[in-house]
Length: 277
Image 1 (tube, rainbow, N blue to C red):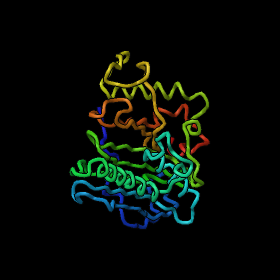
Image 2: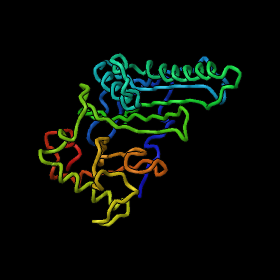
Image 3: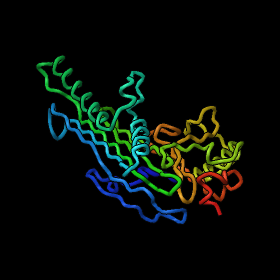
Image 4: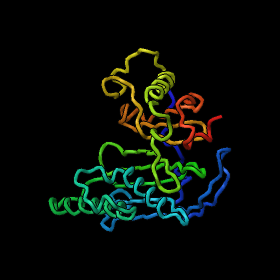
């Protein structure tokens, strides 16, 4: 069984601004869009103990030079991927939130928690732990036809453990998010699912017909792909984050499906044609 705790190292994502010039990536094409890594960072002003009971929030992301549509599209995806919009109380304004608002609201929640503790227990020391969120969006691969990116979110605001999620996105230079329906021929679903399950069972050490049992969280004990995938030069990389199909302690699971296994269903007019020989 192959598991990847963090698909790309955090040190590759820079908190400070960094210029990224076009460079050769693969035989499928070269980087065609330059971008700069920018970031927003906020620290609580109500820290009880700066080293252990404080809140820090950071959000780093690429800004494409001369392409605001693509930048805005990627940022909308990054904000959603961070979990910021998961609450049923999300307002219309929050649905259009910027990275700046995301980090400010995280720290504001901490400040509200501290203020509430001081109000409820004025004669007691404030108890708790440090809060931290670190959201980083990175371009993984780029061709003239698409940009593959990912948003990694580390979040801790109390509880038994922090949560880390990685969400992929594939965008055209015009900011359109590519879907599986656009990558494959009509009626592809059964072939893709069967191919994916065969590879998944091999990776997990399961024989054909073995039940998934209690270890896996597939609905009705039936294998299913999600829509969290990245277009890579060697194949489609799907990712299940912690809690999605396994317990938190098992970590994330990634499944690479080589294009050689998908030749019969690939849309030859789509972006994958450059990877198929």
